[in-house]
Image (cartoon, rainbow, N blue to C red):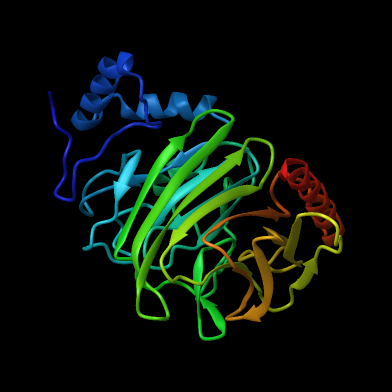
Length: 332
C-alpha cells in the first residue's frame, strides 16, 4: 500500500474521517490520487458544490508545493507564523453566511472571513489573491492584533486575558464536513500557566448550515485560568444581554465602521452564567473568565455585506435575541 508522507509527518487525506472498514478501498484510491496530483481538484469541486458547511484544513511542506487537504494535522515544532505552511495560517470553517479561521500556532484565536456570496470560498483562498482585500467572494474583515479575536481561547495572566503565546503541542482533526454541519477538534498541551505548571485542553468546534453561530465545548486540565472574548475596536458599541433569568448571556459589539473594510460588523460571544462570568474590558478584549475546567460557549459574526441581512445595530440585536433564545432552548 502506498504511504502518503512529507518530511513533516504522515497525513490522512480527504475531506471527512471515515471510520467504516467497508470504505477502505475508496480511501486508498483517494489517497493515491492525491499523491499523484490527479483527481483531487475534481473531487473537491464536487464536494464543495454540494456542501452547505465546509471545514477546510490544508498544508504544504515547502513554498513550492501545492496545498493538500488533510483531516488530521499535528503542527510541527518548525512551524513559524507567516511561513505559508497553511494558506491562511490555520483551520477554516464556513457555511453560506460566514467563514471563520483559527490560527494554529501560539495565538490559537479566531478570525472572521466575511462572505458576499453563499458559495464556498475558503478552499480556494490560495487561488483568489490577497484575502485582506475586498473581492467578489468577500474578505478577512477582522483585525485581531493581540486580543482574543472573536471567541479565541486564551489565558488570564495578571489581570488581563492574553493569547497563549506558545503552544508546544498542537493538533487539529476534522470530525464532520461537507453536509449540513461542520465540526473539528483542537488538542493543545504543554501550555504554561501563571503558576509555572503546564496544562492543556481539548476544544470541539461546530457550526450548522443556517446560522452564523459557532459552538465550542472545552475540557481543560492543569492550572490554566482560561478565558475567551471579543475584540473591541474604536467606535464600536458594547451590547450585553439583559435577561437575568436564563442560563445564557452574551457580550457583543457593533460598529458601523468596525470591519477591516470600514463598514458594519457585529460580533457576539455567548456564555453560560453557571460556568463563567464577564470580566470587563482588558487587552482590547471584552472577556469572559471560566471558573471550571469543563465549559461551553458560542460566538458569531454578521457583516453588512453578507447574506444575513444585518446592516444595522437594531438588526444585529434582533439576531442576537434569536440566537440567545435558541441556545436557551438547548440548555440542560
